[in-house]
Amino acid sequence: MSDHPHLESALPGFSEARGIIKAAGDSVFPLQYRGTKFDFYRFANRFRMAVRFRGISLADFGDETEAGYSALTRVFLVWSVFERYSELAGDPPPYRQLLSLVPRIELARVADHIERHDPEKRLYDFLYDQSLEQNRGFLDRYRNGDRCGIVFYAAAIRHIYVHGHLTAHPNKCEATDVVSICDELAEFVLGLMRDDFARRVAVARGAQ
Image (cartoon, rainbow, N blue to C red; front, side):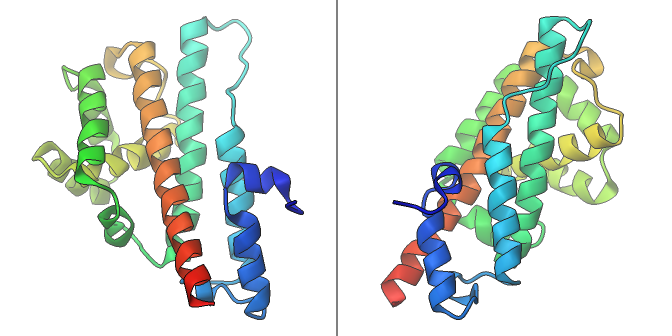
C-alpha cells in the first residue's frame, strides 16, 4: 500500500517514482528530470490540487457566471502546474519535447472542440488582443494550422485572467462555451503531464 495514497490517486506512479528517487540517492536524474527531489514533490502536490479542484463559490453571481469563473480558475491552476512541470522536464516554450509525444489526432480533437465552442473566434480574438507579444506568435501558428498551439490558449487564459482582464463572458462569449473550452484545455494539459510522467517512470523502471 502506498505511503502517500492522496498523491498516488491523483498522480498514478508517484509512489514508484518516489522509490526510484530514493534509490538514486535522492536524485531525480533517473526520471530524466532537472532540479531536486523537492522540485518534484512540489510539482506533485500542486498537480494534486489542480486535479482535485472543484470550483469556487461566489455570492450573488448567476450559476453560469460562477461556473465560468471556476473554469478560468481551473485553467490558471493547471497552467501554473504545467509551468513547473516543463521546468522539471527541461522543456521551455514552445514545449517541443512534451508536445512531440501527443498524437496529432488528439491535438486535432481538442482544437476541434475549441472551434465548435468559439465558431466566431470571439474568444480567440480577445485572447490574441490581450496576449503577451511572445504568445501571439504561437496563437498565429495555431490559427494557421499548427495544432500544437492549443497549449498557448491555456497560457493566454492564465495570463489574462490573473491580471484581471478576463471575465466569464469575454468579448460577448457565452459562459457555457468558456466553461467547455477551459475544461477541455485543463484536461488536455493534465493528461499531457500525467502521460509524460508515466513514460518517465516506465523508462526508469526498465533501467533498474
